[in-house]
Length: 340
Ligand code: AHR
Image (cartoon, rainbow, N blue to C red; front, side, top):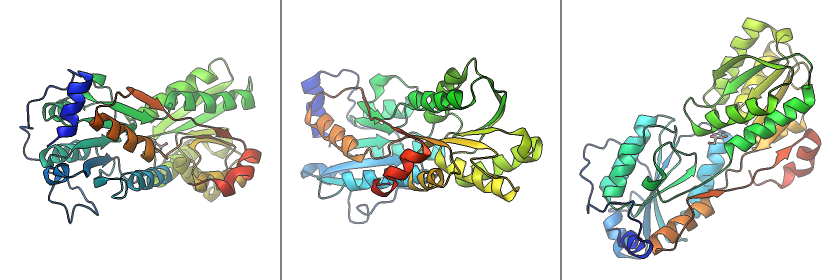
């Protein structure tokens, strides 16, 4: 198994991956599911042919963004493109995701792709993958582990997204005293951490005050229930601005504001991140005021990186995909042509 990666090591001299031949990890409980899995007998057989067996550990299915990302990954890691994809969605559970990765290692896949739920806690399992000679490519989110433990990452600049959202808020409210509530993404995730930091930097010195900040776990239901709590505590009149770390939580906030008799986008302004279809529609409808894009279409780049790593072609440690941002007018112009 992993002949392709061995040749990568030989070619690139990447001493970071200590090749112990196989993983000693047992006891995996990961519950991978795959269209390929039913017919597959595992990575070793696949590696004997030209098919590349890839285990993909997705975060879950928490948002519209995630669905678009999963679709993009499945389309790129297709049989037509020379892959056998073993897909696992961890339901936003970090322990379940690590378990899924261990399962991929035990199956002897050719490469592992991870969209890490949270940043911390990856050192051991990434070392196990390295010891087994299996290259790991990260997509979407980053980890705090040493970058020697993975081959490459492709994704978005979450900090810059937060800055863009904050710059819009700073321009909109300036010195005006503004009470803001925040709907945070999954606690400990790279986008929640970095979008918070970027936004806070951009609003420093303005009249915007964060009166409350809680996690809605990147879900619509989470955003709705946290917003209901904010309205109960501060009243509609006590909140001027919602900063939601993703569209889905912003859409949940809209439901909460409307149920309480408020007008989202007018009584309370809303800025979100993602620019998925439902979010863009709410922007066009005037219920959201500004959206910073987070492009979920990372599949093709991730698949190319995996092929390059396995072929021994040098890859960068990080590939950033560009984002845009949309006002209500700009959203109306592009909404019909967007692919997600
Ligand atoms: O990691 C990207 C984030 O994860 C998206 O902004 C959010 O919608 C998703 O759940």
